[in-house]
Image (cartoon, rainbow, N blue to C red; front, side, top):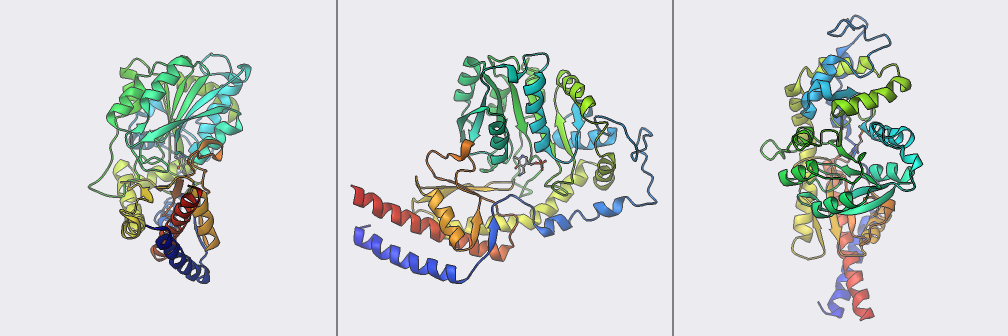
Length: 425
Ligand code: PMP
């Protein structure tokens, strides 16, 4: 387009933008929260137990009382099936997997990993962070003063050439954040080759651990398009690295976020190490909630059926965003976006240097997005191009408007950038 054409287009887009401002929208798409209809799906969980219920679990434990450090056997069975791990490899925790991840890093800091030097006694600790990634992961490592190193994501998972090289060379690298299935925010799932390469890593640090956050293990959007991964614990064992992975999951986005059940799966050696800490930390987690979840779902099929109902609620939300982007932005060369088969997010790439401006434009017209940069360690997106879109919370009608506004803001900011670039030439 000529400069004049661009200026004309800018004027038209600005006029359309002003119309949006007049609508006084107030929508929040900043966090990956389930919407009310999704939460309503789990209300029967509240009816499963009442004052007449027998709260004795299968091994005879009275769940109303103290005890059972690492979780009810039937909860290990159910969550183990969901995580594709044996009950023996599972610890059931409280209500948040993020809390478990924090705890693992905290324990490694103060007491070390399986007899290795506590990290607090080492000069420097480093961590690999596939980007874009989950802001709260980066928040934990930043809080502990761990130096975070960006690893570019691909559609197959993190850049494994770089991961292999860095972990084998640098003993200060103690871990990596991974969201292997329907990653946050791109919705990518690691390929078989990526998982195999993870299992075969040869880290310089003996206490290097893969933080395998399987937050979206059963969160498919479609019946006929479901990503499947190779199971990492099993693969690590086969590769002679049985202790290299901590795998996390929870029922946060299955039942009630903040009131679900969280779990960790790992090798028996790691479990022993962790339980040595846990026994000083708690007498036991919330067994009543574990029992409630087990009696509600019964088995993995129960979870799967429930997740299909979630998918029915949120699939149209993903699709309206994708359709709007297709209609408004396809082929313009000013942005690209992911089309995931599951999870909670769509990831959008603007032209370089445009993400912050797009987020700010949306905000000024009443739509709050996740802050630009949040998907990178230290909130620093070097290209200022990634925006995380969380479509689950608003209604389909609101999303239609929000996606339309978003596309408009992408166009406007891109045109402004092109004009700016042409002036600087
Ligand atoms: N991991 C990832 C990748 C997530 O996206 C989320 C929720 N946004 C969590 C963990 C949080 O899990 P929890 O509620 O179990 O702490």
